Length: 471
Image (tube, rainbow, N blue to C red; front, top):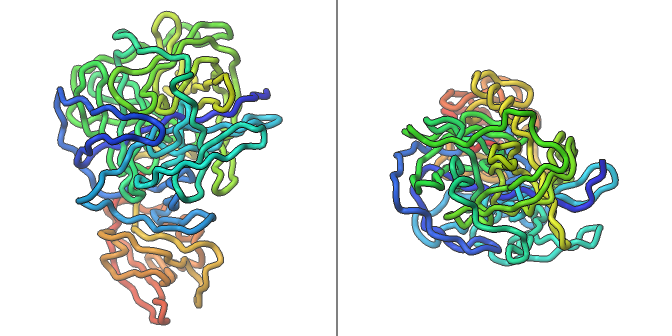
C-alpha cells in the first residue's frame, strides 16, 4: 500500500562510560540531564559490535568488526574520543521516508541525537563537531537536511514548533526512559527513547537507537534516576533491541495492550524524547490511519534499501528522538513502538512496530539463541577501517584503510595500506571474506592475524578481540 509522506526515525542516546554534559543538538535545544537518582557504574569494554549501514557520515563499521568508509566524498577515519576538548553534540535519531510508488522509501537518519533528526527513528549519526546543515530536496519536492559539512544520509527535520504535540502527562511518562548513546569512534552522541518491560530494568527500544553506540546511559523519566545499560540482543532487520540496566530494581513498567492491538480509527498517542532534549516527554495525539504498512528505509550513502513490514501508521506527529517510545491507545496501554515518521510538508505520518511483533522478538532474544535476524550481545571487533573498494593492493586480501587507536589492530602494528590475508590460518581474499570470518568470532577470543605490509613483508601476530558497537 502506498504511503505518500516520507518518514524518519527519532533518535537515540549512548550509555555507559563517563557522562557528558548535554550540549545543543543539531536542530534542537538540549536540556540538562536529571541530576537526581543514581548512576550505576557501567562497564565499557570498547566497541561492541559492528556499525551498521546507518553509521555516521564519516564511515561505517562493517559486521566484521572493521570500519568501512562510505562511498562518497572525502572520508575522515574515526578516532577514539579525546579526553579533553569540546564534548560531542547529541542529535535525535529518526528514519526518513521518501515517497515511492509501491512502498514508502525512508532515508536513514542514524541513531539518537547523532542519528537522524526525524520523527520516530533515525539511522544517521552526525559528526559531533559538525553544525552545518544542507538542504537537499527529494524527488517529491520535500526538503531533507543532511547534517554536517560532509555528504551523508539525508535526514528530514520537521519543525518542532509546528508539530502538533504537548507535554506528556505523569501517567504517560510511567515506564518511559530517555536513552543517550555515545558513538565514540564517530565522535558523536545521540538520544532516543525506550520502554521499561521489567522491574529489574529490561528496556525495549529500536535497534537504530543503539546502533553504533560504545556506551549507553538510560534515564528513567518519572524519577530522574540514571543507569548504565548494555545490549542484551538486537534484531536489525526488524529494528528491535533489548537492553539491560545495571543494578536496577523496583522500576515501574509500561502497561502492554492485551486485547487485540490497534485498529484503524483508534485514538493513539506517541510519547518520547522528542528533539533529544530530555525532561518531560513530548506527546503527540492522533489516530491509526492504516495497518500492515510496509516502508523502505534507505541509506543514501549506499542507495541500499531496508524494508520494515507490518507497521502501524498514524497521523500523530512523531518527532525525532521519539524512536523506541510507546504508542499508547486510549486506555494508556502500549500498542506499538514509535519507529519512523514522515517529514516535509504540513502533515506528519508516524509508523510504529506493533507491540506484539516487538515482544515476540524480545522473547527470542531472552532465549540467548541467535537466529537469521537476532544477534545476542556484542560482536567481535579488531579495530581497523577498511579501504574503499578499488584501493590499490599487491596481494589478494582486505586492504586496511585506517587503524583505530587502542584496539587489537593497533597493538600488533597494523597500518593503513597493509593487506590482511589470513585469520587463524584461513585465507582472507577480500573485505567480504574478512567480514564473514569476523562474524563467526567472539569478543575475548584470541586469533592469529596474517597480513602483508605496504612494503611487501608478510607478518603474523596473535590478538585478543574486543567488543564492538552493535549494528
